[in-house]
Length: 443
Picture 1 (cartoon, rainbow, N blue to C red):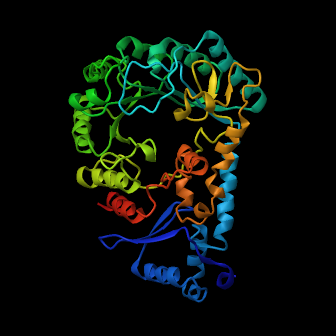
Picture 2 (cartoon, helix red, strand yellow; picture 1 turned 90 degrees about the horizontal axis):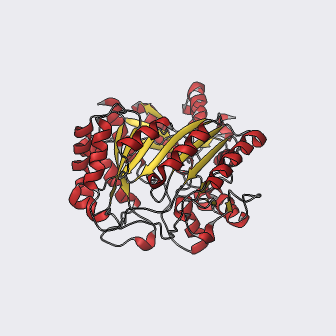
Picture 3 (cartoon, one colour; picture 1 turned 120 degrees about the horizontal axis):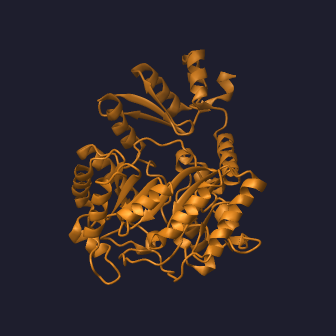
């Protein structure tokens, strides 16, 4: 059987580092195996020959182990079908709901790169709040909903912080497991009064964007009247870290970067970490690329350029801003899951952050008896852009750790004729990542 049915998997990668450490990485099992010189040479020969005769050089124990980590397989295509089945099972599971709520689309900032082109006034009403609670109750009672991944979004959600607090408390009282409770804010209203209320409402994570020091940040993220916002955000952070609530939240500070301000990232990274000295503070780079039409030679960063930045930050400064090893947490984006939603301030339902406010992309309304209505768009997101139906993706060695990239970028490719790069940062760069990961393991 070993001699006739097994073959070298296309999900295998043999890597030799600069220090001559040798590894076998398998993307299907997400396994990294250290190899001695002899086994590496045998596997290298097998990978190039891919015949069955060389298998006789391996012991039965070695073959069984290589089978266990899917380095030796009978049929890679069958493994892809299993991955597809697992993905669909997650998509259509009713046990967990990704719920994003935008209590308002209004914002006090006028960020230069904001993608929210569909601004509309108004705030989430008592009626809509009740409808949200009743719908979640229905899912729990009728469909067996067990847990929620909760995000507060906008606009600027803290313009309606009382609504956030009211809804958060009522959702908590439903008795579901809340896997995460994240508030995305510009930080301008993250005041001591609001902090105390957010703690009481069991918000667990705060994301704030700070695009460098004052001179850079205030140009990119000013108030609507043009005035700067840096000083107010820093004062709010100072007040929080000097208060009795310090440590109540995991604070993630996103520093949006492109070719124009990449060099300053490490300065603000060090400054913030030195200033607040908190293990629950994460400062990380965000890449500002909306889609291919927004890119130009001076600002757009390609996938490989982004990878170079992440690897460079670790190599030069020891800063891990992106996973150096593929994670095996298989989650489906809210966009593709038919049961997950973003609820706007009028109760309208969207499938993606970028759709917010665009009436053509609503898929329902939480206030309506039927809730869902635009099944054509729901189906396009869930099925029409499924990367497991893409012949090129199915044959790709990186498929198990890729997950198809951003669904909206894939949607643009499939239905709008665009050519966005949706591939994983690991594609073509797995040796670079393992090289650095090896240094962490061994140095």
